[in-house]
Image 1 (cartoon, rainbow, N blue to C red):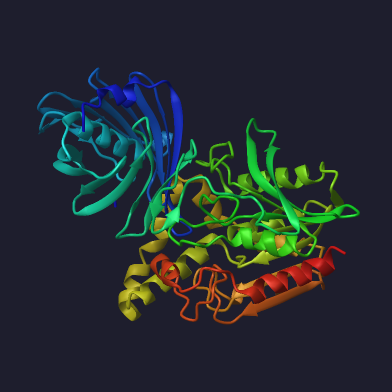
Image 2 (cartoon, rainbow, N blue to C red):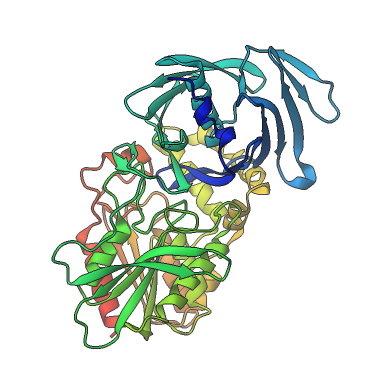
Amino acid sequence: MLASALLSLSLAASAPDTTVFAVTRGQDTLATERFTRDAGAITGTLAPRTVPAARYTLALAANGLVARMDLAVGPDSSARRSTIRFTADSAFVEAPGSSTERIALRPGTLPFLNLSSAILELITVRARSIGGDSVQVPLLINGAAMSATVTHAAGREVRISVAGVALDVLLDAAGRMEGGCVPSQGVAFVRLRPAPTRPIACGGTALATVDYSAPAGAPYTAVDMRIPTGRGYTLAGTLTLPKDADRRVPAVVLVTGSGPEDRDSRIPAVPGYAFFREIADTLGRRGIAVLRVDDRGVGASGGDPSGATTADFADDARAALAYLRTRAEIDPARLAITGHSEGGMIAPMIASTDPAVRAVVLLAAPAWTGRRISLYQNRQSLAAAGITGPAADSVMRVVPARLDSAAAGQPWLRHYLDYDPLPAARRLRVPVLVLQGGSDHQVAPEQADELARAMRDAGNRRVTVRIFPDVDHLFLRDPEGTASVAHYASLPSKQVQPEVLGAMADWLAAALR
């Protein structure tokens, strides 16, 4: 996966600031990156989900080129460290315990880190300083000299091609990357902070600011919220409130699944999908308030998602729930929490320890540990590719070790692999609705019954399970039900099945009476 002189737009000349990107494919986060620029350096952390995180510092020369790169890969205690010094025609690679290696390079060569948005920005800066509609920018990739072809399209649109893979990028007025996508792979580069200033097309989906207001004629209003967390940052969200209510109304907090999502639970590679917006609209028409929130570090929300675990995201949801209790329009005795996918792990974490939560809705919620789910999903992916039997067994034998290796440098993955959702589910003493798609290939449908059985065996008799045939993990109509992002994007309708929304609304209206 991967015009005119632009030194006046050089990133090295800008004031210090911090940028956060996520690289996503559908609901999966492939990597997050956080980097800070000042006049002489770019310092950042690139954290892929499948390999250890890389911490880097790029020392910038006066002309905006990289003079030196310091790189550390893996946990601090055992990090593999190296330094690359760039001269006019060479790179000198130094690593502890190894002799210095010289690599002959073209002048102006830049180092390349796969999935790094900071490097992609530098490539566009270098291309514009060279000048021309289509230029070659020399790169050092894994110790080899290569080139990127940078083609300027209309406005601030740029195409970067490396090793035959094309990445479409949109730059802002300062020459910084607002976002981009790899069309051939369904991979999106999503700038989380600062939020993009205008729409960015990636498979037809706008990644920029979305209108969260209520639709015309809706029997509810939509109010922009800023929610304190007690950790030095605020979360941004939308509270939909029924109009003309003659008393305090019940309310629901929505909790998103894994990966960076805005308050509507949009997925860049699946245009038109906005699960939480549909839930808010459905419940708003039934007289139930809904608070939906941009994830930490996404859109207008503050905070840093890199290094955060599911338990940390649960704290953000707790802050949203606490905020609802401060609103005069909300009845604090009639609060519910609803979570989708990873959010379905978070909701029981909260409701099992918060006696004020009156009801819980779990949407495609896991009953297995992350490790077991990962093994299941790998099997599903192999089967979808036609790899079965001994060939699949051979591939699967190496998966556990690769998961452990990746988890060593990834707090989220380490927590996810080990976390067992059933103990928290067993502690729930409130009514619970479990909704599950029968063609879900990300969270196996049998997990819905396993969750319900664990809760009932622990004494909770107020558990309802609904499994919808031909409905997938996104709750879209999907008889085939593969977990491929391209498959989701190709579905004729991106609207959540009405019977799912109706079942949720009927149940919550009764539970929050």
